[in-house]
Image (cartoon, rainbow, N blue to C red; front, top):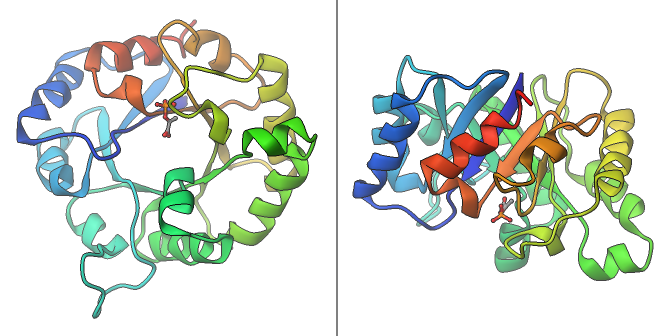
Length: 235
Ligand code: PEP
């Protein structure tokens, strides 16, 4: 089963439940599990609505602590209480916009596991790092610094230069990085590819060895596109 996860980022109001409803109304895609990560404001209502269905609901980030004096933050336990099953940690936008280091990402991933949820831990190189031939070294360093010792974990390989840009690595570039991550992580850890996944390229990317699913940003906001991507898992 491939995991097709949608990262809605800072998009979505109550009315966006129409997109969730469209996912719920469609038959469960063959060979794919669906996960929608809406903004924190929608997690509880989406999880209630999707309860018992083929669609899971997740968070996009969390604090590493369970509770306390951290104004504006949300803990993994709160997202679990709201019905989330997974939480994305270490997304490159969090690393860039909020200065999150590998050490912080590791604490967050530990917090997710402490709450009984599955972390989706993002790694990926910048364009400068790719161009200088440092990709595998950067990924290895990020894994070394941010992967916690937890039972259930998903890794998302997201080249920073492919996020929201319409550019994707070649399938051999994806294969090379996924093989390196798989060798480092061992069996049992799913590895998602993320970065400009669209209905038109999903089947090709999902067919690459060690690609166990996709983390989808922009194209996850429309149910029709998200379902078309998930259909690529059956191809
Ligand atoms: C993401 O931000 O996780 C992502 C993959 O974005 P996009 O699909 O829009 O490139």
